[in-house]
Length: 275
Image (cartoon, rainbow, N blue to C red; front, side, top):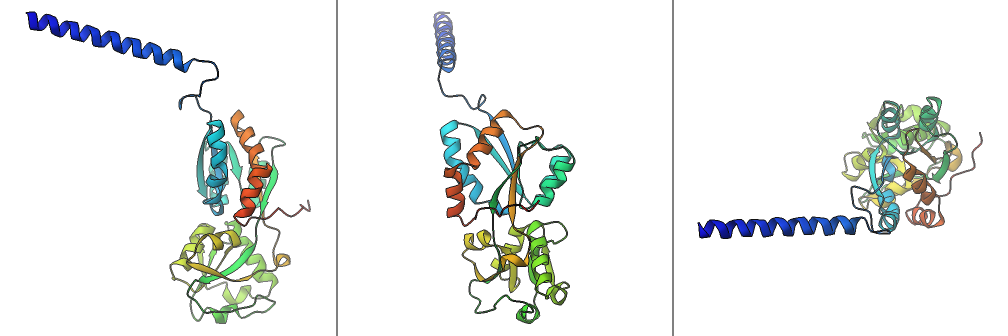
């Protein structure tokens, strides 16, 4: 019985200690100016084009550390993301690799009015595996088909992926689209096209300059003339269900700090819109 009594005392003391610790934690958590707990931290869901997979988390990193805002990313082709948002996916911000898929959501009233802005620009390049010795100058009628040597050309699917649409526009304007149209590997996004070349599965591919410089397994053969395709713009907008914290993150992405980080990764200022 004495042992049982001692055990009961120990249990009572532990219970009191646990109650006291819980009370102290509660008081500490309610202190004015105290850091927000993970459960209280604002969460912003960002849907972004696959070509931003590496750079966007790095750019947003300092902002997350300063503010405590939780930023969750979903990367895929702009077409896939736009359709998901239209179907009700929980995105607060959408960063597209072209204007058409942002227009798609705008036409369906899925964007917060007045929040759309052109954030970034990019360049279109022809790439080969890093150990390839191929040289090729991009100009009207250039020998792209012959340079494939019976292989295929990796591009984002021109029917849906922005990088693929830019590639088709460029090759059409240069007069070589028909020569390679039946020899494409159509990737689901630009990073997929990059991987086909990086793994040596195809001799050539067309991607954004920032994708090419981010992967040492490929090299840039040449840069497409800017006038050969529509300007590459990355529009940013809040969705119609965006949380208040999304607006502050959007402001940060437009700041000089963020623009400097994007420029360091090879992105350029967006061309002035013609519309």
